[in-house]
Image (cartoon, rainbow, N blue to C red; front, side, top):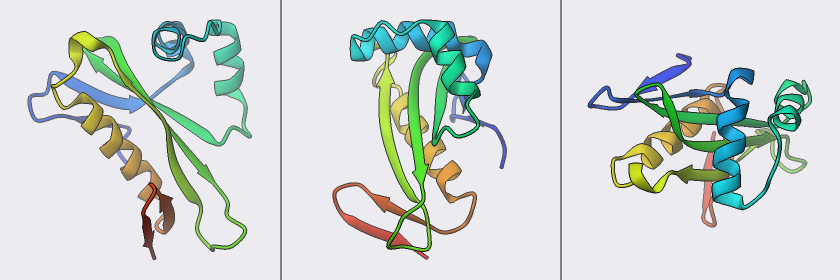
Length: 128
């Protein structure tokens, strides 16, 4: 899977977050969730090999302007993992440009990488 996905206008790109993104993720998380979580704490969580969430960032002109988080966890009752979008945020100044839609699409591509998955979005949708 390609780690980076561009939108039609090539001004925005989405990619899986790295440890270098923790300062910006901490800033955006505080704006979105009102949670003051330091970059050190985020770095520790991102580096955890047992982490079940994958943060995805959206960049415009090399600035992170939004993020999403994909959680893939094994299911007891299904052969495929459960995919859940746990966070989705775009800074107000960058909304209505398709950035949120691109983040969701990137998360869906990541969820599908391993083939089969179970999605719960309030409606039943099982891909096999």
